Length: 105
Image (cartoon, rainbow, N blue to C red; front, side, top):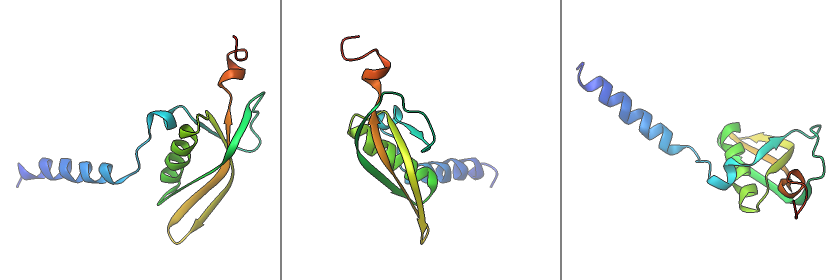
């Protein structure tokens, strides 16, 4: 029994980790901001939303969607929770050209 328990823990941990949403490379560079956070000279791209079984899952979903739009910031304007699901709603922004001093710099 003592030899089986560590294997059981590893298998259960793997299965639980495999079930959650994964952050894409594009989504990893997206920061989530509150409506009161300063955006500077960022340019709006589009409205975006993300859903998941938890707030963390919804955050991963919205970051991944925004990353596909080449956004690097999302201002989250609303959080909706119903029937065990969470949905984040916001607007995606591109700030990379502004942070680098514009398109030529």
